[in-house]
Image (cartoon, rainbow, N blue to C red):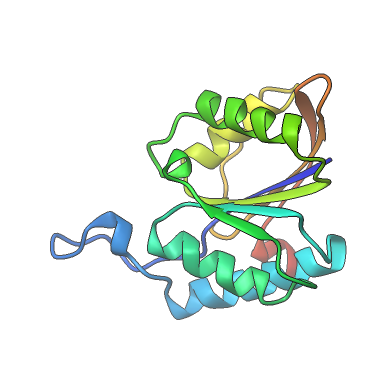
Length: 160
């Protein structure tokens, strides 16, 4: 089973006037999401299930990426994967879903630092990589072991 953990594209700067959850993608962030969506479509043309943070920038990133996929996967918005989310809770949630569903590919659209913590939580190496904006971690996940191997961490800079 393949897990794709993606950090959102570049977002507008934080400000006092706008809550963090309402920050939107910049033009650069939209381009990053499009580049990575194209890469994902070549490597995984159809996803079974998608989970996205409720924050606008993660939703926008998911929309851009999913527009390049074949078909429309089931999609869920979850507050479990906001920046302050708990990786262990997300791991438990994913394992619960996978005990019921027989999906072969899941993508998560989220934020730093949880994307790093989640990558560590879900893999044997227990690495906490730093994600550039719009980077994707590809994990080969063994549902029986409830752990996986980090196969790749790819960012827009790697493709341009």
